[in-house]
Length: 120
Image (cartoon, rainbow, N blue to C red; front, side):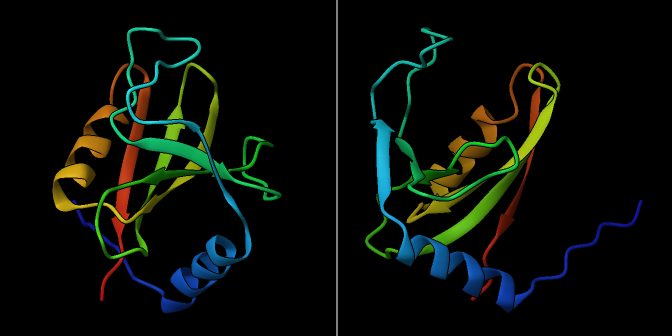
């Protein structure tokens, strides 16, 4: 099978601008429980970018890591067969360990993701 990924600097530049121009709202801080799945505890801050729009009609989602390098690290592209939708989640300031954890938790149950990391 052929694997293909072509990075596009303009994609990352556009995402940088969106993150810079919109306030990050953390509505699910580290250690909080998921509102529909109380057994799931958020391992990192999770929120959205105010006044943006994602494929699900809500604001753009963002995971906030603990790296001192405050920039977009990558994105998760998710297909969720329970919700019957797909969306993208921005990964911001994530360490390698945090990226591995986010990949794992976003590939559980009937939700599956691919992770695209920013090359620099």
